Length: 497
Image (cartoon, rainbow, N blue to C red; front, side):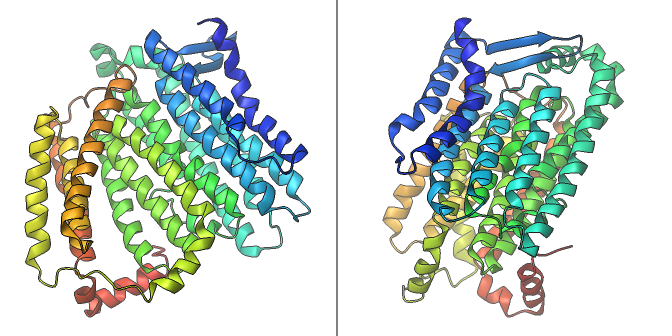
């Protein structure tokens, strides 16, 4: 296993190698040979899991942190996802910018961005994670300003730049506090030390302040309210950049939260705040998304809503489920952006398609929602989910119930929709249990001292999604009211508060 650790640095240059091959062989197709890197990375991840410890490549040891790389199940799964999507985007870019005079510089910045993201994922401490984060931000800025003659693109890049610098201030401030408190910035050292109840009691305020700053830093990177405004404005950037940003880079905040989850699990009120902000971001961004007519802008608000839901999962302590969400959303959103050009054609045809008949009465949606909740909570007990002991799981099951109810309501063929819903429930619960087993030694099993915060979080977060369910099934009624008209105008403008 020790010899395999020397392969880790090769993954950082793999995107650069693929980019070089794409430029030399311009007609090189997206064949399986290009995916040797992701396959090998996945194999190393499996070996790490089977061996029960991460693969470590240490180049230099210092007093407070080590310079090197670490591959475990968490970093391996997400890095495999990023590298796979990155290869597709690099090949897509060859044809997309075929006649662009600056395509060589674009390709280099794209590959360097991917390398920095992979370095961030495999960083063993906060110092290297932050340095990789800075590198990602720098090269992403070059990509966002590729069309330098577009004022909208430049303005959006500037907004992203300053929001990112604010996030850097949060992360640096948190790092300073952590260094003074733990005398180290190595993740493993911090996680081992925080498990001492006496240490936690003696350093209550430094730990909580550092936790708040980490959460704020993650929120800026994942476009959470009130730091979300820059993302929908980046639509004038090349489509491959949008695909990479929405499928990979935007997940950095969620990855930071999951990576630091053994530390954050000791600050329940900070996580409760994260859950509430994430729930509100998901709620508000979804409403805005419904009003947008620009395809890429609608996808941007969809990403904000999805990132809000991911932060909600982290705040509830469902870190393993958040990882499933990160991976699934990355593949979906990369596909959505790379195929966004076909949506306009579909939109022109869609006007002639018959629309599904939604419930005209107020009661059927809510009766169906209650039945769905009863079914899903019963199935969850069969899967041995600790519903009463973990309020966060209950919130996610309520949201899943509403989603299933919406599928059945919106479908014309009820029997097929019921079968589809059962499959979704089964797959969701199986993936959740499987990821929990994979991340057993990486993410915490529960949030310490969550009793009061858990009840409040449950009420607020479920209220957001019950409201969304009500709005979605009563759009025609709401749109005729004075409140509905004002809400529509506000949402159409992007709801810049």
